[in-house]
Length: 310
Ligand code: 13P
Ligand code: SF4
Image (cartoon, rainbow, N blue to C red; front, side, top):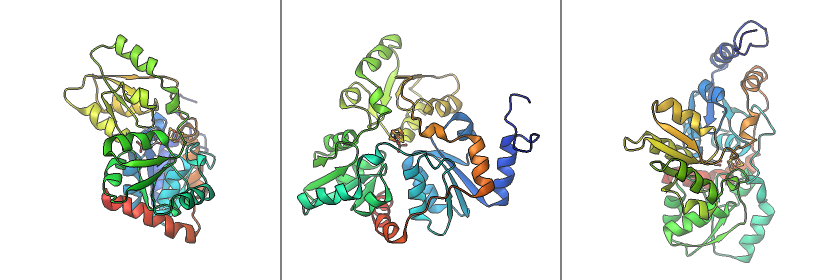
């Protein structure tokens, strides 16, 4: 066996087998910017949550292999009920999305009647179904700015919520959810990296703690960071998000220097997707992610409102 992975027939490289099956089954592979390098390299499109849902809304493929976490595949299924949406590891969830249930949100709405609910895309379909608007880290500020209502409930990420409230000046009731991966990036990490690389710019994800965001030059979505990395005036960049985003930055910007703010910022759920599982998923057309129709229709309203804002 060479260092290249082999397919399950023991002879053909895994990548070739995946490409063949993809054609045979009219499938498209979508991957998030945090996926393993080899999964990103195999994908038809790599992007942030907003770009991936836009792609999912437009694809003509009959099968979508979603290399990301459960809520992302669910969003693809909300937008494409007639298509087969596969999540190569059914256990790839997002702990932040699990920090609020539909029951808990209904209770919060009952406490604050008249408030508009804005829900981060990192949430279950059931929670989206209870929401007025969906948003991602790329368009959260635009979505909230577009809402005339005075009172806004924002779930589940308290830190993205605080970031949006700061940018828009809106009064927002924040749910106490957080991302365990971004919580691992500490202010002292940013300070240490800045000392080691005094010329470098610093970008972080708005899921980071506010004292980390305060030390950065910009807080951006993952694809916002990818665009920032490509800027001509950026030669060295300290990156405060999941470490595998560096693969795409290095690949697209030879000669530039990218530094992880903390090597501890690994999302174990994103890492559950492997090429072997992508192949197995295409072979068996499982595990499929499907949302019950009654929930899908209500969740879709919130997602469509977001997509209309862009
Ligand atoms: P993006 O939408 O910025 O890609 O973020 C998704 C995510 O899960 C961040 O942890
Ligand atoms: Fe969820 Fe955080 Fe992983 Fe993003 S990085 S998928 S928010 S656990």
